[in-house]
Amino acid sequence: KEGTYIVAAESGDVLYWNLQNREVIFQEKQPNTQQIFYYKNETRCVVVSRKGEKGNYTGICIARTVPDGVKQWEFEYPFVEFKNVVMSPDELYVICYGFEKMKNHIYVHAVKSGEFLHKILVKYTGFKDVTKMVALPDKPSVIALIDVEKGNLIDIIQKRFLKSIPFWDGTCTKDGKFGLYAPATGGMDMLDLRTGKVCKTLIPKVAEGIFDVVAVFNATNEYVLYYHSGKKTIRAFRRKNGEMIANFRVQADLKGMETTTDGRSVVLGMGDGSMTTLTIADPEKDGIRDYLKGLPSRNPEGAGSSPKGIGGGYLQNGVEYPSPYDYSIYTDYLKALQQCIPPPSKQQS
Image (tube, rainbow, N blue to C red):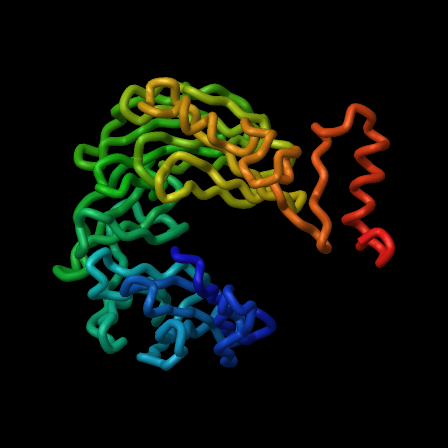
């Protein structure tokens, strides 16, 4: 979160990058990486990889310190199709979904040592192929197995099935009270996970065909964001009243969507390689007008020491980057831009 280190997988190696020095500070072989996640205030990192042949894979979970890369523990488990490994919210258990002796199992390991504790046979009424596994923020001992029709709650300590929540897709607020149901066929409902019932319909069910959709809560649980690949739009809804407050059309297919920790902005990774940052401009939110006034997009004159343009004193190749706002003729702006790209000659500098 501090942006000091990056843990990455590249060409069969696990790499730790120091962003300040832009150097690799740790490197170790671990091919076929499937997942990377942090724990213990980002001082530990778990990298999950696989080995074996299709239909008979073995998952390898290795925990290392950050930034030293010292191995803490390692364990293996069998699976057919990989599902993301989850850690309980209290950071006591690592839970894996696997396949052994022609049956699906949940494998529970201790976070402290990686020690295998027990396995749970996955068996309940209405079982369908699991699409993903999620932990419940408010119930450290409960995980949910999500399929195309419902979310199925299982207590990993008591080793028993609890209940199914119809239509739940695994998305929930940080307090675990509300979830979402956003099928590919259209529409979106907000669910009360305590009762399993629909508490708000955010988008009515309309037959629009089958498209890729992404539905998430923002970091502060104040808003619900919904992306529709057919319309190529991102819609924002207030969670408290279900009212839509924004409808933004994106320029390319969405590949990733995250919100900032303060919940004010949304960062989009697009299929054309671009990255866009949007601010949720809720007119009912206190201080939003002042916040918008301070955004770079609303303040083209810049805030740097330079009195000219959007550059605000920004240098590229030793030359101040020009602003189109300072030139009435566009060709003059292009001439100034050539001083930065390519680098200026010695006579010009």
